[in-house]
Length: 450
Figure 1: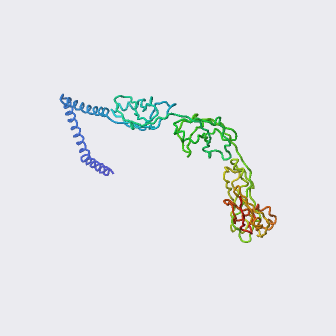
Figure 2: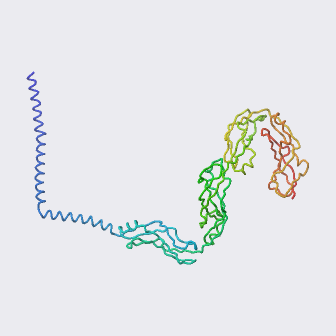
Figure 3: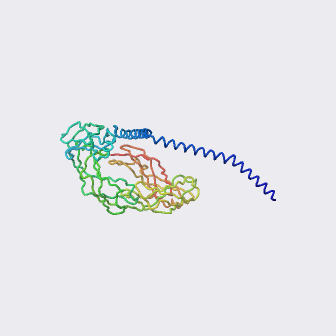
C-alpha cells in the first residue's frame, strides 16, 4: 500500500514540474519583459515632457487646433445665408367703409438674406408684417408696392410678388330679402322635422362694389341642424346663424353682409300618420290557383315625415312576388319607406297567403273615368261602348262574388293628349288585391274638345 502511494505522489510531482517548466515559467518571463519595457518608456516620456521645447511645441499645436475650431464656428455663424418665409398674409391699409379693393394677393413669400445670427433674431422678432398702404388713393387702377416690415436693418429682403395692380371701387350698399336654408338635415332625428324658422327681420344690407352687388341673387341664413342645442318637439333658439350671399347659379359671392349673423327661433315638430299596409301580389300564380286570404302580422303602420308628404299618402304598399305559387306560403318581408317618409313604427312584417281554386266572373257597366286630362279640355266617348266597359274578375269564388261595379275603377290616362279623336288603352283596378281585374275591352275611342 505504501509503495502505491509513493508511486502516485512521484507521478503528480513529475506532471507539475512539466507544467512549471513549459507554461508557468515562459508566461512569467513575458510579463516581466512587458513590465520592464513600460517602465523604461514611462521614464523616457517623462524626460521628453520635462524639456521646455517639447512643452512649447505641444502648447502651440493645441492652440492652433482650438483656433481652427473656433474660427470655423464663427465663420459658419457669420457667413451670409437665406431664409424663405412662405405664404405670409398681406395687411391692407385703406378706408374699408368707403372702398372695395380687388387685385391684391392674400399671401406672399418673403426671402430674407443676411448673416445667420441676424436671420435668427429676425425670425424671432414679432414685427414681420407685410403691408400695402392705399391711404389717399382714389377709385381707379393703381400699381402698389408690397413691403415687409423688417426688424433688423442688416437683413435684405425680397417679396414675391413685390408689386400688385389693384382696382379700387367705391363701396355701395343695397337691401336684400333674407331667406333661410337648412343644412345637415340628415343629423335631425328621423321622427322630427323643422316646421318653421322665425327671424326678427328678413331684410339685410349687402355692401361691395357695384358689379359685386349685381351678382347677388339671394342672401340666406344657413341653419345648421348639428348646432341645435336640443332635438325635441317645441321651439328652440339658435344663435349666431351665419349669413351667406349666392349668385343665380348657387355659387357663393364674397361680399359684406350687415349683420353678419342673426338669431332665430326654430319650431321642431313630429308629424305622423297611421296608414294601412296594403299587400300587392306581383306575378302569376300556378295555373288554377287564386288567393283566398292575405293575413299580415301588422295591418297598420305609423309613418313620420313632413306634413305635405303625409297628406298625400293613403297606404303603405307592400309588394309580394307570388310567381308560380301553388300552395299556402308565409313571407317575411321588409317594408319600404314611401318617398318623403323619414321613419316608420314597423319595418318588418310577416305575410301569410292562402290559396284556393280559381273561378271567374264578369262585371258589366263599369263606367270609364279619365286621368291627367289637360286643363281647358273635355272628353267624350265616340259611342256608348266607349264610355263603359265589362271587367273579368279572377279569384276565389267567395271573394269575387262580393265585388260589384262600384268596387272597380276603369280609367284612361290622357296625359299628353290634345284635341281630336284618339284610341286609348283602358286600365282597371279594384279595392281587393286578392282579385285579378282584366277589362274585356282593351281600347276605346274618344273625342277631346277644347
